[in-house]
Structure formats: structure tokens, C-alpha cells
Amino acid sequence: AASAVSGWKTDTEPATRAAPQQGQDDEQAEDTGAAKPPISLSAEQISLLASINAYLNTLVNVEGRFVQTDHRNEETKGRFYVRRPGRLRFDYSAPSKLRIVSDGEYLSVEDHDLKTVDKFPLDATPIQLLLGKDVNLTRDAIILDMKQDENAVVVTLRDRSGTAAGHLQLYFKRPEIELYEWVITDAQGLDTRVQLASLRQGEDKSVAFFAASDIELERLTNN
Image (cartoon, rainbow, N blue to C red):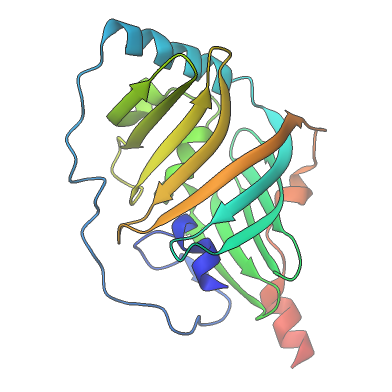
């Protein structure tokens, strides 16, 4: 279960933890994203990034399906929901009992089988670059690489503030910009790939829908 969500986590300790996770590797490796220098953008790339920013700012309430592949090449699937600014929810399909949810302040990694939850500050995770009220990758990220052709564009970036570990690759279709995949590379250099499908405008979900579960309370009640 832990490997399925490794790319969502950071190289720092959780802000809160309902129960200890077993078998976590305490060794920290160099942040491979931070080691890469930024690139100089061409006029075409600057224009393309402006189009990407405009597109990302249209994704206010969206939902769809995802397939996630971890660094061990193990796949998990499920549904996701986004409500900007700051809110996100990934519900993993059975037999997984995982859920990842962001309430705008913390990203919670919940395991409803083990009754554990780890909470991390949202701004310490690379995915926060996509969840701001005003998404602007040119302003808020350092562009490490950018490749494009007539069918797709791939942008590799890391958080400009330095608070988020690892880096992020975003994959967009062209000529009509559409996000279809991202890869989170954590501080150990391990990749978690998320492929999106059936992306559509969603209903305006309530704040409670994106709240973390009371797993700690459930665990204490069941003991």
C-alpha cells in the first residue's frame, strides 16, 4: 500500500500522523529535480506556457478516472476530483483501501485498511503547483525541461519556493491543450505516474467532500 502513494509524499516527516507506518525507508537521497539547472525558454515555449496556464486555470471543478503506476510498476486505479483552489481527492478502487485528499492546507494519505493517515503541508508537495487560485507555472515554478511537437508538450518543473521536494512532469495534448498525465519524482528519485481519463467538468463538491477522514477516531473506537 505504501508504494502506491510514495510519489505523493515528501522527504519530510508528516505534520501529523494517526498511527506509525511500518517499513518506511529513513534514508534520504539527493533531490534529483533540484540538481537540474533551469532551461532558457524560446519565444514559442513562453507562448505555449501562457496557453498552458490559461488552460489550467479553467480546471476549477473537474473529475475523471486515473491509472497510477508506482516505481515498482504496480498499477492502481480509481476516480479523482479537483476543486480549486487547493482541494483534491483520489479514491482508489478495490481491493485498495487508499484515499488521498487535500483540504487546501494539508494533503492526507489515508489507508482505510490499516486505519492510518499521514498529513503533509500541501505546499510541501509538487502537486500544489496545479491547485492554486491563480495557476502560473512561469511565476511559481522553475522550468527544468520542456519538449514539444505538433501533438504533445511535456514540461518538467519544480517549485520555485523550494518548499516542495522532488519535481513534476506534466504531459499535455496539442494542438488543443489538455492535461493527460503527470509524473511526480520524489526526493529519492522514485517516479509515480498518474494517467488521466474521462476528464470533465464536475459538480461543485462541498468542502466536507475534501475533508480528511477521522481515521484516528475510528481506530481508537474500534480498539
